[in-house]
Image 1 (cartoon, rainbow, N blue to C red):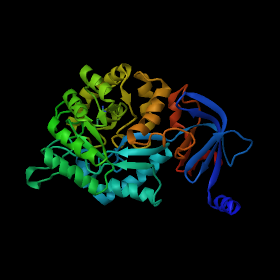
Image 2: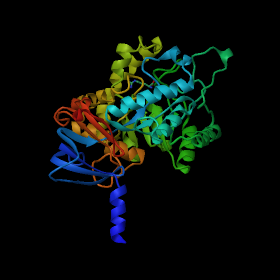
Image 3: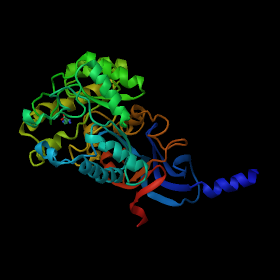
Image 4: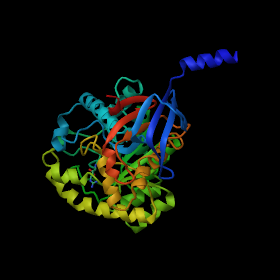
Amino acid sequence: MLLLFSLVTALFAQTMTVRCGQLLDVATGRYVSNAIVTVENGWIMNVGSGPTAQVDLSKGTCLPGLIDVHTHLTSDATGGGYRRLGVSVPRQALTGAKNAAVTLRAGFTTVRNVGAKGYSDVALRDAIDAGDVPGPRMLVSGPSLGITGGHCDSNLLAPEYHAVSEGVADGPWAARAKVREVIKYGADVIKVCASGGVLSKGDQPGTPQYTLEELQAIVAEAHKLDKKVAAHAHGAQSIKDAIRAGVDSVEHCSFIDEEGIALAKQHGTYLVFDIYNDDYILQEGAKAGMLPEAIEKEKLVGKVQRENFLKAWKAGTRMAFGTDGGVYPHGDNWRQFPYMVEFGMKPIEAIRAATVEAAELLGFKGKAGAIAAGHLADLIAVDGDPIADVSALKNVRFVMRNGKVYRNDWSK
Ligand code: ARG
């Protein structure tokens, strides 16, 4: 019987062995040479050594699949401002399929997508899970919750169009009902716009939008239903309101002050600073259709945000890697790593933000973010030494997600 059982498991188990020239242990920051990773049915079974392996990555450095906790796969960077109005929801889903493949090939095996129209993100997540299209594992929010006229409303059209974005809800009970609604239609996480933004029309990043009372209602409802909350907040007051209300992460964090930093530490709130895309907005934004006022607002945000990233990191806040992919072209997510290093992190710390730390924020602690037995088989390999030069993360040559190989440049 036992023999039969082992025979059957041996026949049906999909075992694969992978040899890594160097394997980065993100916990210690050290390399293990010539490691053999054994993968079975999408999971890592063992990390050890041995004479042979089926997949040879001996020229490469293996790392856990990277995680970006702030993306917008269903939109393209070239479609800013009024151009967005001409893109249908089904078209956005197809744009998402394209960008999911690009993002996966760039080494990101998990993303949290925070804000999409018409549940195009839910459709994309489900298509990826079904194996219909290649892409990273996705946690999605559906439409972002926001106030009338706020960053997460659409303010581009004249009043007679009566345009109201799907996530708009004013007042604590309406906001609670909206949390229920987006969960009903498939959201894994709640995205809420606490402050104004850069790319929106007619508001200011530093100005509060949702009140503390509304934020508390949103967080209470989401947590009751076992979902986490990500709050867009540039302004100092909104960041503090969001943290006090109990959100799980604050996105952008541009004008965070000393008190906000202290509160984030006290509450253990993750801060997600998207400190790369200032470059793209200032250099390419006008060509990409972004509003002139958005580019002016960016000039007030970008530099301060980077300085505050340094302050918050030095103070010891928890941070997860999130880039706002879609504001800049998908696949360029790695470009944020050198900035994180320039503004205070060691390369290994930036890599931890995109692996173990991001995994913890997403609720995947012990399941993703490390190459270790019992973890999902999400593994990438790059050319070069990312600990010596974090820009090596642009040289992705191999990508495995859930035990399936999506890219192997060395097999050619
Ligand atoms: N989606 C954000 C907003 O419109 C983008 C901010 C980008 N700027 C930056 N420095 N991170 O507010």
